[in-house]
Image (cartoon, helix red, strand yellow):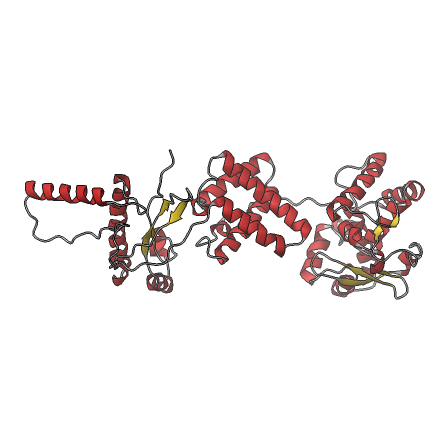
Amino acid sequence: MKLDYSEPNIYTGGVDINSWSKLSKEDKKEALSKSWYVYYSFRDPKTGKLKRQTNIKAGANQFKTKRERYSFLRTMREALSKLLELGFNPYKDNSDLEAKLFSDQENTAETQPKPKQQPKPPQPIPAHQSEPSPVPVEPEEDIMSIDEAFKFGLSMKEHMMNKNSYVQYKSRIGLFEKWLREEELFDKPITSITKKTVNQYLNTIVKKTSARNRNNSRTDIASLFQLLEENEIVTSNFVQSIAKLKTVPKRNKTYTPDQEKKINTHLEKHDPTLHLFIKFISLNFLRPIEVCRLKIRDVDLKDKKLYVKAKNQPVKIKIIPDILIKDIPDLSKLPGDALLFGRFGIGEAWSASETNRRNEFSKRFKEVKDHFGLGEDFGLYSFRHTFITKLYRKLREKSSPNETKSKLMLITGHSTMDALEKYLRDIDAELPEDYSHLFK
């Protein structure tokens, strides 16, 4: 049987009361400036869902120290817990419960010595009474269920993210939802999800897949809870405090001159369209998915300009080098909305998503890799690494490292020098000269 109520809790100004001694004076002062109260939820007889009830302050905020205020509210919480156990229901007439409680108190008073003076604990106000409550109250507030909160978050993110990112995001949140259902935690309010809950789920991902996948899931769940916090559905985004695990990034290897020559010869004969696709990666330093986004109208052969929808900005303009222009066929008679690289040729309509189009070209290139016995460390992205390395080393022959990077940054399209330097380190573009003479 499901309980008709949640255990009462104490709101302490948005801070962890157990870490009070570690807080700064400013944090303590700010926490005490807020209203503290006891809160709980009770199952609404109409909807069958737990509904947040009126916050109970009972004058607790008249106390100016943490010790006094928390002690007072703790007493309130214990009293409310006892009342709920005895059957208190804010949606019903509690006259019988009142009569029983007062009768018990009178019987106890007759059999025990009368105490000198004891403060009377505040009593919850029965729902049937119409007299004004002496307790300061706040408007009733519904606590969203996990289902409602997830649906709200996904509907908002759908309008905030691009299509490809949203598909991955929705998939990861969906896997978290599936796990919550399997653990019988889904049919609860969103506030029932704790840091421990999320950590338990992330641990299952590490065991099944990898630390990288676990970190990606953590990022997406944190993004969801940040949205819920900003919309005041949860009080804080505790997922951000969960640390990321250290991962070893995987990257594509660069091709040797011999491998590059053999692949080019093979593609010229067996798949010219894929060959041109790879030239856009190699000579214009585009990512495979960026090539998949190109339409006929994005290629201006007259002005030698390429308009690319990039990863880090809506549209960026790149020049088309002469070495590539000579390989691009006449596009003037093709419709501007057509994709530059269709499924079977240049300038075709293709209704598949960007990701699926990229995957299609990756599958076609896998046949080439299998033909030459290349492993999973090689891919379409390897051509970008290979040609940036070649260009860097050629520029480096006549320029200093800083001059080389400045020139290279304009060509590759990296947004910052730090990003370019990290990329060059990852692909081992800079290698030392032979140092054999140092050992003589």
